[in-house]
Image 1 (cartoon, rainbow, N blue to C red):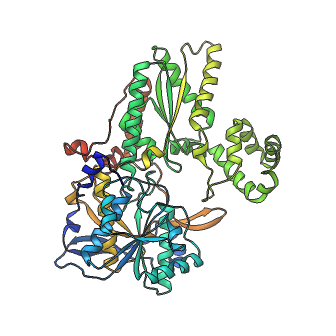
Image 2: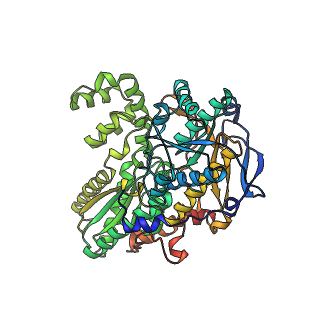
Image 3: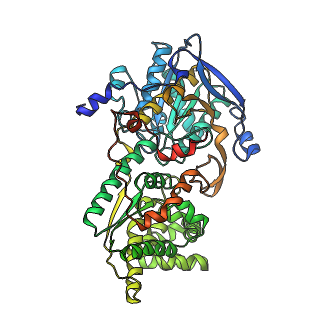
Length: 548
């Protein structure tokens, strides 16, 4: 693989570890745990992995020497730092016993089921240190949830003499890790399963997981792009830029980018839902800011929109719920009809309230909501051009106001969607260190005989020496939720807390940002230089942890 100059320099970077992982490691166990909700049901479903204690790694006196081969899986969407998790696992298992081997399952959980793997040697690992992407072994979205998959995976686990599997993924992937850990424990197969918290969306977060890996790098990457657009916007002074950002289930990315860049408007989906706002109310809010800035001759600005906004508008959320049921029961009846006949069929089968909402939507959006879902049963919101939908509706509203003499400016819109641009960026120093520490923690959990745990690193706003590494039972994060029409145990998603400090800081400033041009230009991620620039955490994490 040909490397750029940056890659060659970054390959030499040695990620920093917390004191508890720097030498010999000892396990410090906390109190027994329970799930965040539905305790009796979760306990009944996971009798072998429920109630285990929290774990912290502290400096010990003697290194563990254990023969253990380990398998690793990258699951779901890419996130910066994934390679460093694997590097951390590799270095730790080799340090524990040089004869230990690490196997990577190719293209996600499907690689385990299909026996598609490769041994990860030092030569391979060294090519990928501190690099972005998941291209070392690839990723996939196969869900591990069926007994035949578990048994098929066991065949290759036995063949390769693997003692443990590490699944690096988001909330769904780690839920699957928990189910797999429970199954292997119940069968006394002696196979450990460990999870690692990955998602740029930032929605895998709780009292034990301060941030999911990749969020730091991705938001800094998007913030650089937004800052560039803001500077261009402030130079040309003739366009409103509508920027959609990744984050289907939560608005953490949009909020973090707003805190870094100070755009004129940032919509937060969770607030829209809490206030029961309609699509028209959101449009009026944006149009009002556009009109107000126009009174001062400022016919330009920047609007940030979270990818999953549509689903959070309560009236559309109710519509989607009914469309999900309609698609499940009658999708075959209408999916081959022409567009007009499909629309008539759907309108005829919806309740009065939802039919009225459906009828007001632009044809393209209505059609997207009524067609196929992704593998998890979700509307494919990334395909809905929410940024264009909003700007078109704002344009129509302003034209209406112009006729009434309420708007005297000009409005021209440009559109952007920042998604894949952030998922495989070279990891920031924070993510490089954080991910490496997660990998070493995962290896230590295995070495100490644990299963059904997720590797964690806490106290991350302090210097790396003072980070606290350990593990949390995955069952502790679970509750029961309705998925695809039935109740299932899942890790609870973390949405933006409207009473949390990051959102309150945003609320404190947003009226001023809407009125004035307060743009901030963060610039590119820095790898060398003062720690205050190179090693700083996200604004979200700093605000959340400032009093802890």
